[in-house]
Length: 122
Image 1 (cartoon, rainbow, N blue to C red):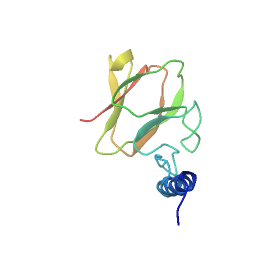
Image 2 (image 1 turned 120 degrees about the vertical axis):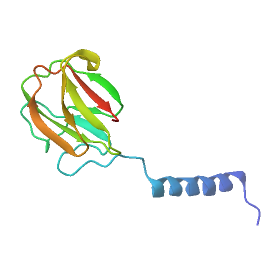
Image 3 (image 1 turned 180 degrees about the horizontal axis):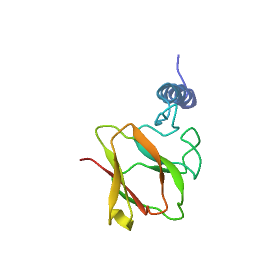
């Protein structure tokens, strides 16, 4: 039985669609308690707990500058592989840094003096 080019393309596209649907999109799974994707560091809105949606999600190593973050905020380190996070009072990870967070830790702290969040591998 001879097939047309259109019939072959429809079969091929159907197979590709089935494979893509089976694999699904690559998504980072959020931790059930913190709504923070696995592999990220999350900062939550002022006065809201980690059960809310994060206002900032940091994925890459290095300094992440902040602006307009005052009073108490929750921050969660949901990274893996031993990656840490710390808070610094200067931009670009400068000045005094504190709150060295190991993976799987987090807390509520005053972000008024904090101007950057640094993700790093010790």
